[in-house]
Length: 622
Ligand code: M6R
Image 1: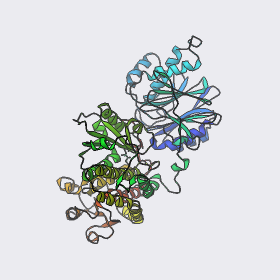
Image 2: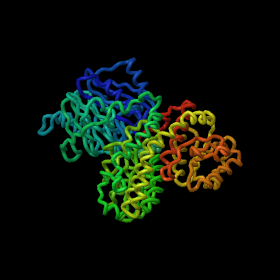
Image 3: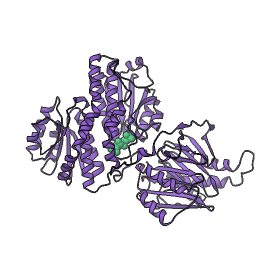
Image 4: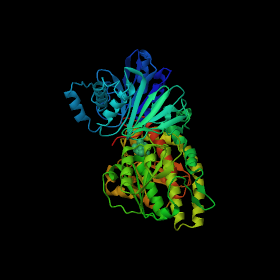
């Protein structure tokens, strides 16, 4: 969580910093702040809440300066107050620092610094970093001029000395009151990207703020420090000196993160799904061999045939797509699959056989638990693959190989298009693994035909939008919802409930429809809507019986059902229609009305759809 930006060059730093923070606001929005250097002084502006409030604060008290850093915060240590907003100052104002991550040993460091006279003004762990760097600078005041010690070295060593004392994760950027030409950044566990411009350089937590400013970027790796000036960039390993600059092209368009006429990113991303699903499949369907193909698995067909077990791990929505993956891979490839919450897997010590392949599923590629779980599996010698959206993200880099979703930037905190793309890629993996084993050519051909119809089916599902809005208006004041489905529709029930919870703040529970009578049915009354996901399939009749059970207890029923299902209308209070799709691909279609339902309910309740309270898009802390 938290987003960092930095600029050094000839332009006014504050405009890049503000715009960059807007593009990173999905990483946290409890408070924001920037600092620039001008006339040998640090000029800081901070505001609680969104970037707009920071922008108004800067409008009323403008700041100049050609170097600066900025931060948008998701609070970990200390509430969302102005005092806790970054940037934080080190020493008596010798420097300012912004930080993304969590310093686990900050309390101990803080006590030590206080004992040595440093004064803390916030409850954050970050302020510790600032004082540690200031301490390093003070200790080396007289060192300049000694062999090997120039001005730059002194500042670099102060940062290096500070980060060597930190336990935890950090992406930091630092500017110094007495060095208006110098910015230093460092990372361990939290991402940082340097943008190389002409006579100017940038830093950001991901590449999105850099789009439109440069097309050349360098991803910092763990334990690296970047020394950044307007006409200079060098990267050092914390312990080993200079490293070679791996300059990559930045392909992102600034436009890809604009609303393009939609009121919210979430709505835009829901509507992008016919394309994002198409893009997930682009170039990956091998019709000649009736299978799928993937460029980046880095495993030979022989190695893949040797896989005896698969672990799919992730968090939140990505964990739900893992469940869809479990059903698909077990049915079509006949490989046993286990789905693990990454936050549990990282600390568990389950017996894992050598033939096990571990997939980390993640939109952002930065989720701390998923990253840690994958690293732990890798450490134990298992093959790890990432299924992720953000190119070159930490998880993409940590895994042995993987598959990108190609869904394009997902900005809304509620994951929508990344979910359907994950399910789609998992379906293709099931096909691929199946065809490496026993699946016939004809079955492979049929699978591909079904996949090719998906973008059209998703497009058709979107046509329920107007009706869903009416349904949302009818139920928007309910305080509890149940989401129920069986087999392939059970993960969809979980995902529908999560979507509603996270953006409308209504309590919702997803359950396997038949499990309802083992407890949750006690919640049913005339005020608690039950959303049944009941497209035609093997358990259709069984779920109809579950609907009867809820109906008998006066529970309102919203059904997500196939276009040509006449029976459901007599039972459900409201029916939202979706096109008929083979059962195993239904998750990709039936989730669409549930995304829209949560969107409209949240909107009608006046909630901030794209930036729900207490949440952030990338959960980079444990
Ligand atoms: O980026 P990731 O897919 O790893 O994120 C995992 C979860 O934090 C994420 O899916 C979260 O649950 C979403 N806000 C759900 O909409």
